Image (tube, rainbow, N blue to C red; front, side, top):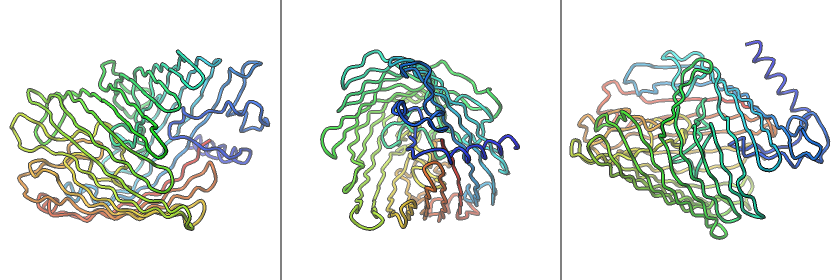
Length: 455
């Protein structure tokens, strides 16, 4: 713990000598080449360290320290009698970004995720003492005035669209990564990525995560900036899983997903409309599943605090009939872990939801939101699934559809450009379905407090 304390103190001292900076969700998307002719402060030397006279070969360093305290009450709705859990999560990340001229780049990032206090032990998203989060080589195969083709080889994070199907999963203590190759084309109006990836497992020790060389995720994702406030995403995604678990049973899964998305996240009218269809095989049977989301909002930029009203609705298929040789349960692939709240208990499979919210800035650097989410099962023949997509509770012959209602609030305080504090609280009121299949059912209550520093 002494080493971690020294690290935190050093990071806070570093902020004293730094200047404003916007950090990206994917840290490898940050570009510090503009600091070439800037004042040589301590912070600038960390972000841009020239290794050649021209300055085209340079190193950049960055990192993060995040502490989170959680209190979870009845996260299993009383089914396993876990009760109250109070625990601490820690996340540390450190990266180096080497640019060799304008054609070659090497990016490496280490991570450490720690958990203390959970009675049931760390979840898969909680602990990995030390491992490699990113380690890849970028080769610029072609570079024109407005166009570029990049080949990326190695371990890397992926993030596409709204994160409903492929997300880096920033909310959990451990972010997701893959091993493989990606070819990316980009121009002023169009971006297209093609990739083949393997998803490795997680062990809690140091540098002991298993490495898979078998492709488990592949696809093509494109974004077309068609017009002002009109953006269109089209994609195909394929996955392969051994012993995939659904209410239908356990079998090998080969699934193909086609997706269309129309969106605008600028000022004024905000919208995100997504639809997807899945087909493939589950054991000896077929897969036929579908899903959709409508997210409509409006940001009142001319009012104090820029209040935003939003309404989202999700409709995601479940299995229509057990044992009929056709699996109808939608697979959310690698979804955003916090898509349905601070501490979500239902995931994007066999689900109907309604999600109104309001958010505003009572102060310039403080964001406050109030939200409610109502959940139903789309099919009475199917159970419910976790935020990760893992099977959770069987239908158990219940004729009840309503899963429950979540009420939540979140406060985000950007203390300075490097230090961020988040407080979230969530109450889950169980519905008829949970009450029907869990004898001693109990409502859930969750509180999370998180402090993060980035440089």
